[in-house]
Image (cartoon, rainbow, N blue to C red; front, top):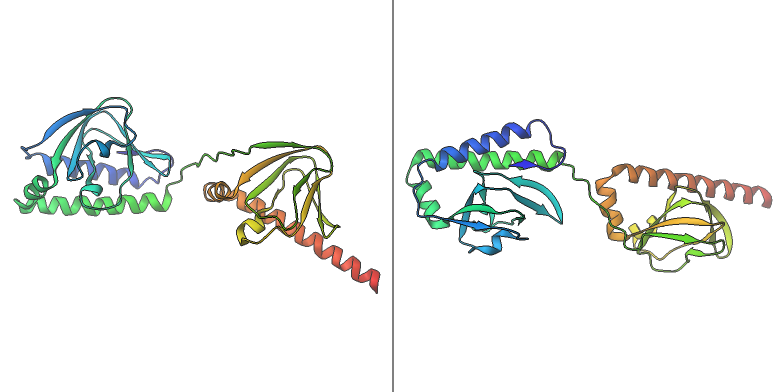
Length: 265
């Protein structure tokens, strides 16, 4: 097995240990089993019964989680162990032809329990798996590809981007141009080139509390709510940019309040 993307250095020795334990564990196995060929499948595990696990004998199988390819199984790796023991399991995608040796769960359990040495190796295999996935979950970073169906919009002066009182289901980034922010018809701020806006109401679930109108020709990127959350998880620097934008707006509002107080005084 190998993981796709950045992984810490301590993962590689765990993978090597896992592979070695698998070899030692199965070196005396004589069946019954059956080798089958598979190709071009979105979910390999749908192609054989839930009571069967397998050992990959040739080819590569890709593990997919939430639409993202995260790892590849190589020849000699177990596949389908989680499912056969009633645990959550990943999508296993097959493109080119692979060969898998299928083993019934009861046959495998009997084989392990026949020998105390195998029982010990099986326990070590499971503990190594736990350690491996702990490391991966702690450090594994997959670049989430955020798709934006609404994409980019071209705006003219006076076009309304956000309307006060509307439902908040999108976040915006102004790629070029500038926009005015108004509340009850009173200008309270501005949006400048590169700023992310509209996120506060998305996070709080409240209605839009201001209207944003293009001041000049603008190019706008529109990001649906759920995809913006994925973007924040995959690219924490986006959250830093967002906080910086919000801080600037709060400072601007405070300055306006002070000016109004001075005018009243």
